[in-house]
Image (cartoon, rainbow, N blue to C red; front, side, top):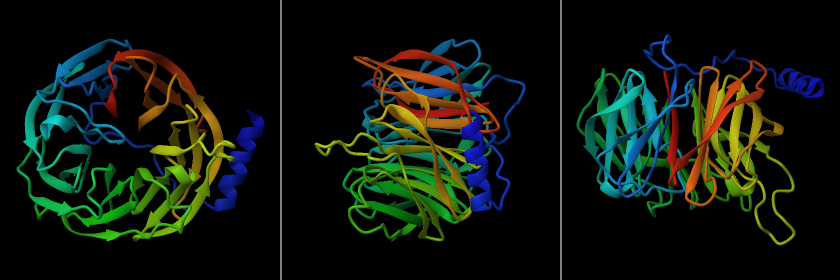
Amino acid sequence: MLKERSRAGMALALFALTCALAAPAAFGADKSRAPLFLTATNGSTNYLAVIDTVTRETDYVPTGGAGGASGNAGGVAVQGELAAVVNYGSLSVTIFMRQGNTMQPVQTVKTTTAPLSVAFGHNHLVVLCASTAESFPVYGNTVGSNDGIAQLLIGDGSSAQITTYTGGAIYSEKSGSIGLLNLETEGSPGISGPSVRVMLPAAPNNNTPFGMAADGANVYVTIAHSDLQVLVVNGQIVSTATGPTPFTSQQGAITHAPCWNALFGHFLFSADSPGQQLLRYLVSDSNIFFDKASVATLPGAPTDLAVQNNLLGVIDGGSGGNSDVSLFDVSSEGELALRFTLKIAGPINGAALIQ
């Protein structure tokens, strides 16, 4: 433990972190309530699984749609009292509002193609679909009608994740693109194209852009099957970090891959799906540094994760017909302590924490 803390301290000094990043907090949340962990059961009849992070009690609330999303992150997103959940099979997104220790559906918005990933930002809900990105204005606790749509760079159904950052919206497609889109705020029109391509490294270091986490103008993105984390600023990759090595077996099978990201201050946690673990990186406005493997080990392959305040939640594929939800307390030094793990029936999708 002392050795790890010393190494982390040296890395922080080496990279001269210029901003004291704060751990994310829910906008307009009631801090007196226990956080709830949210994920979707993702079956033909979709439910939002609502887990009390203190009592472990789980409530299943119908979304009114069909699931079916896979290979993506951000299937659930939160802002304040609201949560958005994708219904891939129904071409819709259900809007929930927190009521006590559960969530209640209050709206459904339709998308033009199948939705895979959602995020809030710039007074909008943004949705990454199979071939488009779309936006819906948010007025307090109400989501308005579609006010923007843009074609994706590839649009072949390999959509991975969308998020918002200071400059607009950014998305990834697993078949080989990271794209930037305009996104206005304060009642102005929503998402608009054309998509601006972020130039990826040369092959073989451009294999499968996946997950992302944003802080201000900085976006930290995985290029999963190349075992890389990259920092994108102003549409350019300015720093790259290699994950655990070697990341392929002698037969060429991928054994490690940073897939999906969650940011906690200057610590970036990434889900290594083939390694069934979480990785930890140190980040700043200008650098990424691979810090520690196996910061947590998981029962199955992790497929999404989320951080709020000092709590991290992660989902994995589990075994058989079950999936797993694991909750960890995060220390100020980025160490994880398991709070609990529980089973959820079905191929769950999306991870979010709401206060």
